[in-house]
Amino acid sequence: MKSKHLPDGFPDSPDAWDRLIAAAPPPVDEPECPYDPNDPAAVEAYWRDAVLVSKGGVPAIRAALDARRTRGQRGPQRRPTKVSVTVRYSPEVVAWFKSTGEGWQRRMDAVLRDYVARQQ
Image 1: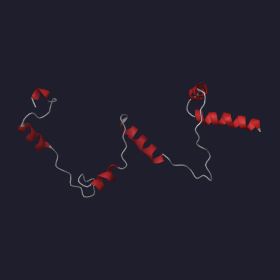
Image 2: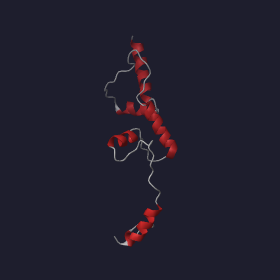
Image 3: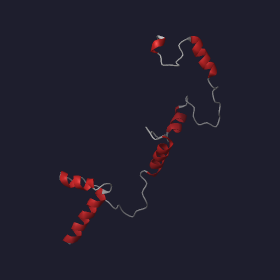
Image 4: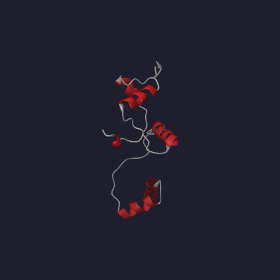
C-alpha cells in the first residue's frame, strides 16, 4: 500500500514496524486473570457480563450494569397482579393517553377500573 493512503502515524516501512513492536509493552503473564483468548470457555466467561453502550462513558456503563442487575426481578407475589391481553383502541384515545407521559398505560387501567366500579 502506498504511504499516501495510510493514516498519519501508521508505520510505512519494515523499520518503522520493528521500532513500534520493540516499543510495545511486554505481554502480561497474570495467572489470576480469567481471560485467555485461546480458550473459548474462558472468553465466554469473561465477556458474559459485558454491556454495550455507545455514549456516556463510565456513568452510562454503570447505569447499564445496574439496569441489567434489576431487569426482570419482581417481588414476591401470591398471584399475578396483571393480565396480558391484546386490545385495539382508537388512535385518538391512545395518542391522548401517551401524551400524558410515562405511566400512560397505568392511567388507562385506572380509568377502566373506575368505569367498571361505576357499572357494578
